[in-house]
Amino acid sequence: MINYIKGELVFIGESDIVVDNNGIGYNISVSASTVYKLPHINSEIKIFTFMDVKEGSLQLYGFMNKEELDMFALLITVSGVGPKGALALLSELSPSDIVLAISSQDRNTLSVGKGIGKKTAERIILDLKDKVSGVYSSSDVGVLPMGTPVHSDEKNDAIAGLVSLGFTRTEAARAVEAVYSEGMDSGKIISAALKHM
Image (cartoon, rainbow, N blue to C red):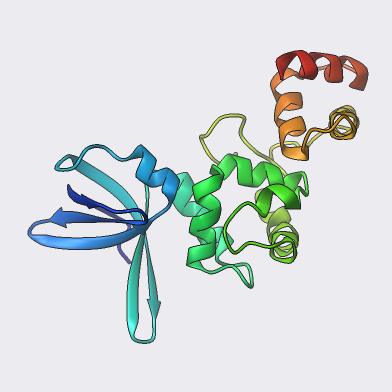
């Protein structure tokens, strides 16, 4: 298994790149968000990789950080989500956004990836909710460690209140997490979250 490739970035396409390592050009499929984060051509780059081996083909998928790689590996364990679908989802959402959408059971947010319909989004939620422990990071640093506490009743009530006002569960949960402090009731959380948003 190739964990990462370090070398010179010699080509950037819409959905793939080529990294030259000791005279060998590795073609690596990447998400749109990875393309956006890439340095200039001829720059030194270290990209984390996942090698997909199928009968008659071998394809590398690349990610700028370990969190994206870990989320990709989780997503492709779900029936109906192949590497292309997982990349499409990571093109639209960060790993922490995906974890938040799963923990919030927000199938609409998970359906933004090309080829990810509502039924597949529901399958992602069902299959991965225990693996992500209903936990997300408020910044793009990826999934928090297993065992971190899930939302309290006050947080859940506040999220439900914000959803009833027209926000998505993902937007509501992110805002609640940003403003919550110990002892706040749902009304205060909603008020603070609205100001934050």
